Length: 159
Image 1: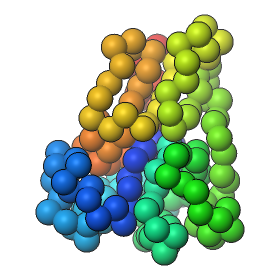
Image 2 (image 1 turned 45 degrees about the vertical axis):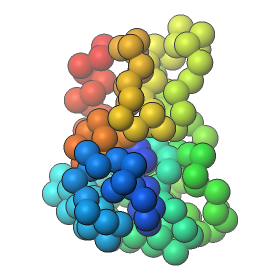
Image 3 (image 1 turned 60 degrees about the horizontal axis):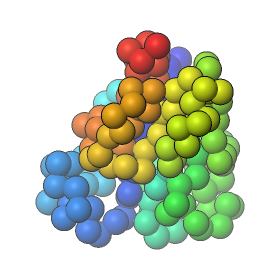
């Protein structure tokens, strides 16, 4: 069983192809197909995926999670503002952050002063941008080819 991370999937966001053309999608439906195919190509049914926020736009699009392999945990992002019961149909847990092997997983990067406590921060929110400090690991779709990435791989590289 592996653990994967991904952020900023933005399922159902009609303008994602315009704002993030590097995702390779022509429109919202194509974006959804690409993400589902990429996700299921690496994640097995017994694997765990920690989604670092901004999963879906529109409550009805949360149900796309049912088409994605693995057990899912959602670290809430700034666009994840629907009723908790809607998310809990598909996600095992909803969290604000999650400590992981000396680091912390969040949607928005933590303040630099907190890195002394946590060591590293796996986050999303910044999409195509990166912070220069290598203790910040951005797993927005734009950074990881719109495909969940094994958390062991990125923590090994950054420790």
